[in-house]
Image 1 (cartoon, rainbow, N blue to C red):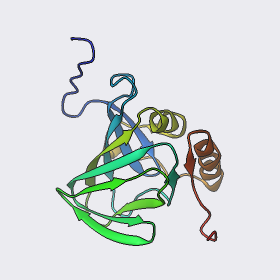
Image 2 (image 1 turned 120 degrees about the vertical axis):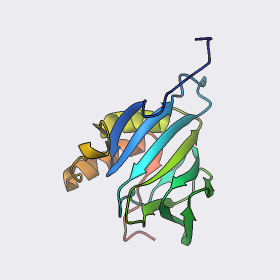
Image 3 (image 1 turned 90 degrees about the vertical axis):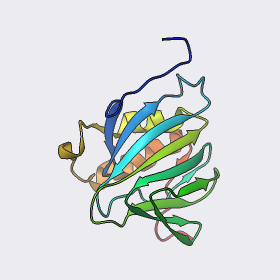
Length: 161
């Protein structure tokens, strides 16, 4: 393949279970010269990350299937197939699959690399939605919070504010 070119067939890419969602890396920061990373995220009903702030990355979510609820700095938005949500760095946000089935979206992170490495260190290998990982233990969640700091990801405590 020509340098800088990528082709990832349907169903391919490295998949990891991260906070109950199957995250599949479609384009790495190495492939884009650090410009961005692109992930496909498959969320089972009721799943999503805890509220967090990415201090070094911008994020864009493009919903492909299902329905998500986004909470952005106290504002609640509903997003179904075709909706796009852009989150500037430094913004408190989270999302949750509100549907009865699996919801999917594409997520870009600019610049790339930080979340890739975070996912690599916290995620568990997955080969599809049938390979669901168990929910993280409180100790594992605390480890993720501490690791997140290294990558500019902050998980404010529920009682903060």
